[in-house]
Length: 375
Ligand SMILES: CC(=O)N[C@H]1[C@@H](OP(=O)(O)OP(=O)(O)OC[C@H]2O[C@@H](n3ccc(=O)[nH]c3=O)[C@H](O)[C@@H]2O)O[C@H](CO)[C@@H](O)[C@@H]1O
Image (cartoon, rainbow, N blue to C red; front, side, top):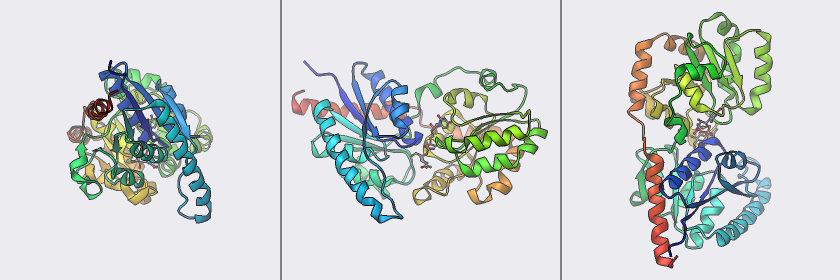
């Protein structure tokens, strides 16, 4: 009898890697309800909470990133990497996956490397328009590479690439939450225009500074805000907000129900993380992008410009945000025609079936392996 499908999914560090992973897992479960899925993440990172919250088991590796500034610290990193590879080996030996999926982030390095060495077929998913270091290293052994942008042959072998787009959590798309319900859930007023401010899964310092510098103006205006600060900036933001008494604003460190936030928003201000962008495309959200300048190879600017070139988003440089961002948002939200055009144009860039296409590819690899190995 054919054994149950067993798949390892590995990676994480930030929402941008974790949520596509969860979405791929959901699609595999939808297509093969009795499949067993095991996540492998990095100890102490966000995935160790978010993955169990999504209903999946996860094992942690003691892995961490290389310090590009202090080379001495990297001895400890190398030691942890070796330990992680050993642990990945024993996880794979015990779980016996038929395929392994890597979504980028620290843990996917040792896990997919070991899977490859042990003969398990691997698939990697690259979210950005610029390939990450881990994925570039893993690509050599990978059987398939699922990407979200054109032109990725710069980094990967052409024959392995499939343009699938980034998988988005299923609940974000398949819901019937109305604008009013969304706004109510943040205790705001549905007769007012609403701007959603998000800084990626960790929050964005510059965007937060822009909002803090404009609280007086927000108080005097007829526009309301849902503002996600990220964990490390939350306390300061809360203190600032308190100084102004009653503000048309809901502030939080992290939004658990992005479906409500998106339903509420007439306009979004955001970093240009690849996962967030895929969500804006699917939901047709008008957005002002402020790419983070602190990411590898400035890939968020590249993500953003791919949209700006198609008149599908507005764009403000991080260095100019303090002077321009809030003005631009206030102008845009008053311009119905612009909002409509942005929404129509960004929708054209959506990949609605990304997770199920990737799940089908994972199944093909796993099935070939099962047949070849008689299990
Ligand atoms: C600083 C950094 O390294 N950023 C990278 C990280 O971004 P980051 O982790 O911010 O990821 P994305 O912008 O891709 O996705 C953020 C995800 O978090 C969700 N969300 C966000 C805020 C919130 O309060 N609640 C919530 O659920 C969003 O709906 C989205 O699903 O991974 C992305 C994908 O590889 C990269 O493109 C980014 O450059």
